[in-house]
Amino acid sequence: MFKQIMNIEFLKKIHSGADETCFTSILTNWKNSQMNDQAQESFDLLCDGLSIREAGKAVGLCEADAVKLIDEYKLRYCNEYDSDLYDRLFTPPDFYDQCKNLIATKQSDAYFSINSFYNRKRKNENVRHINAFVLDFDFYKIAKYESMNAKAFYHQVLKKKLCFKPTGVIDSGKGLYIIYAFKHCSYHMDRLYHAVWKYFYNEFEKYGMDPAAMLTTQVIRIPGTINSKTNKVVNVLEFNNTDYEIQDFATLLPWSQDQVKEYRKDKLFKLKIPKKKEHKDYSKRKIYFKPYYEDLKKLIRIRNKNNKNDGYRERLLYICRERACWMGFTIDESVKLAHHLNEMFNLPLTEREVEKNCKPSDNRLACSIDTIIDKLGITYDEQLQLKVLKRRYIKKSLYAKHKRKHPLLNRTPKQQAIIERRAKVCELKNVKHLKNSEIADKLETDKSTITRDLQYIKTHPYQFIRKLKDYLNELETYRTTDIFKRTEMYKRQKQLLKWLKSGYTALDYLVREIGVAKK
Image (cartoon, rainbow, N blue to C red; front, side, top):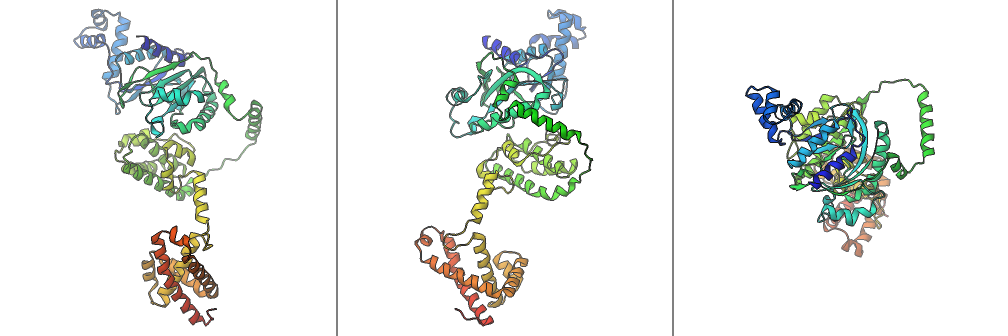
């Protein structure tokens, strides 16, 4: 009983500024939630022909309470919904009553919204009061902490690193919530809210903080309910009666108040300058969509192989549709692209979920590559296999590695590959008299590449002879070193030794044909 009271007090602390004009969301499977026996009896009596007043009197309720209870029963069990989980929004008194009932009946997978709304739709544009920051830690996904429980992780790892005392610490049954409640502020503070949240994410990303839990419409599990994935109760580990304002967290940001004022002045000045509205043709961006789409396909294949099916499918399809619309595709085209990706999942979503749950908001800018990586939780190993969705430092590292010259051959891998291919082309064309198409098939490359190589050899014969002779001499020297024997892969050694013969054959032909002395 004490725990139930503390859970309700915690919810009241978060929504302390709410009044009768505010609505708070509860997300759960309402059809499976239980009501008290009075509701069932009242509804049965109503079905038997009694009036609401008579049915309420029979179970010991006044007419007003009976009406309220029967309406609640009808909402839960007499409506049809496509999804098992759906939202219902309540005014504060009804919200706390519903939470008490869900906690008392040990409802599984019940969530409540941190912020409140103008009306009964949980949408970003309907947010009225912003009430708290929620830091959601999926620490169990990190090998270093996977053996720890939520309480141990908080006390041993996280507690000393928090710059403010948390209002609440909640064991979600699998992960951990750190909650900072503050005096409710207007939705106009949305930018400050997200700026502070990003600071927290940059600080705690390495501890498994979830980047997808930063929405103003965010919901978290109701304390006292059950997490169906682990069958554990959601518990409040720590509850402090803090008295924060959102401005208190602004001190964490790297900008001073004067800098913010100066920035606002500059922005207002720029807004006063009238600009001509030009209609942009976004269809020109379509050609750049393919690499993103191929990377998303590749990511699905990798995770299908690792049997990872939950937690990223909706986000991936949402990002696909968002990026497609931003690059000039129509909404119908973006839906078709998303359906194609959905078919690749081991456990695909329904068509309705793809079209409704994964629909981006209108006129939304596309996420940056770093944001996509954060939202999808793409690991370092996965990024190495992708083409576009890579952190900048990984791209720079791979580019530097690609440009790094061999210490003894003094050439990059690409330069080595070109000179080796041209020598082989010269041998196959002029000594073995093969056709360009046959050479292309043999070397597993395009016919156009072979044509360009032959054109280069024909127009720059002396330059090619000099490069080839230098490379052969360097390779002969390299062949006798210990490095060649110790560090080069056996397969690469065989390739070089096999090519060495082709290189000499091509060189002899060129020297004889052009009449230049070998020396």
